[in-house]
Length: 295
Ligand code: APR
Image (cartoon, rainbow, N blue to C red):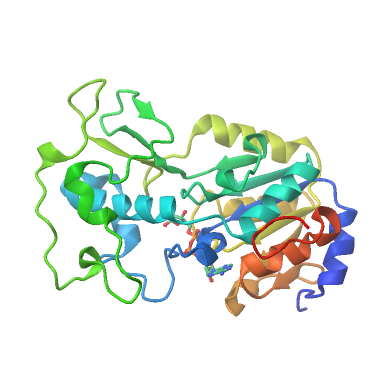
């Protein structure tokens, strides 16, 4: 049976919902100009982004991995939150039983004013740096851009009709000595690395415990699955977990195949999260203008 697609039906349903959870992914930030991971043409030079997101890749070639993350950090700092981030932040301010789990590391939800207590950045933050040797050093919300002088080629601004040399696989990568990458000021031996969770690494245990206890507290009315391919665990498992706690599943995604697996009673809204979320929450948050302000 096909999922429901009526915005009016969803608004009625949300108005009578109490415990709401969202699982967000890269598609939420697509309208802010940030590329998704598994999107069309998703190579970074000749590398798939996921092949660069591992401790082994960093160990093998820290300069390459740092160039990739320094470029993503520059993009995230330059980007602005979109109406999707603002709509979720407004919903959180009006519904204390709304918890937003984001896989995004771009910091755009906090910048949209999403209350910290109702936001969990499952995969960390690209604005944090920490010691690769795990001495315990962490520097939160570090806005250095470029990350260090050697990584300046990742933070160049180019006109939108020209390709940044760093992104052109025909232009050789700048040669960077490991000594010129940022080193840990605490243990003085380790390299610093981005504060994101890489493949093969665990998510923060304390955060997972908190999320699990929120899930167990009481039945959940709805899980919003926004702009995520929902293929990376443990994040993706929250969808079934919420369903087992009674939740309807609501998918917001332009890819028609992302609605597969939904049942009768669930909702599927096909399209851009920044356009759809303000409409879905309008009864609760009010009308939103193009800049993301409630009017
Ligand atoms: N609005 C909503 N969804 C969109 C939009 C948009 N404007 N544009 C693209 N999407 C959808 C795509 O159809 C896709 O389903 O966003 C999803 C993005 O999927 P991925 O690129 O796989 O990103 P995500 O699910 O966030 O990846 C999860 O994988 O590589 C790791 O740690 C990384 O956090 C990341 C995790």
